[in-house]
Image 1 (cartoon, one colour):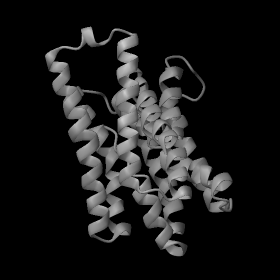
Image 2 (image 1 turned 45 degrees about the horizontal axis):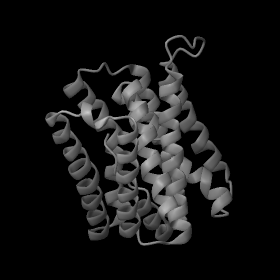
Image 3 (image 1 turned 180 degrees about the vertical axis):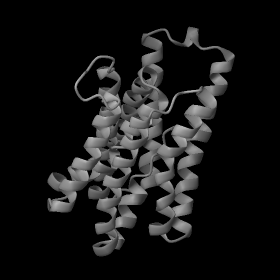
Image 4 (image 1 turned 90 degrees about the vertical axis):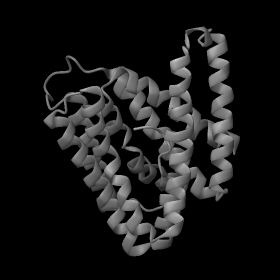
Length: 239
């Protein structure tokens, strides 16, 4: 369980925050939203689920979206691409997708797993800060941001999302999750004055479309399994 937490939250946060520091927030969030497709990929070898044509199509469409975002629509040139930023966002998506599949396979209590995961993340982050002497660089304003990010953006958001899933019809409530990357684009523009490129928006649509293709099948044949996967895979991290 501790290993689950290290992979699904600690490494996920570590990779995602490095990626979001190197890329515009809209691009980082869009690439990171590949994690539902990673659930599909890892469920094949770990959960022994069948590789169907619809899954292959969903994966290919989503990866086309990632390529579009990473290259900004210029497939013939790699100039200006921050490969490190793209790599770390992809690594974050892989970690979280792997974590969700493991959580489903071993059927641990989600709340307990996330509590342990955040505890491990706090300890690991503290060790890194001590080794790098990073505490001296943290200002009082930074502590406010850290508390906001940890308590509101992560902990409270996860608890509210879990409560929402448990209080209504999961298949309907879960659709709200697909507003996440689009809201990231909007807040990136409003709060950070980031430019929203056409390629980023189209790439995001490709990714979400690929995810929806897969979910259509799950809703038809395995509604109970869908509820479990959605509960395991809600994203508690910041946009």
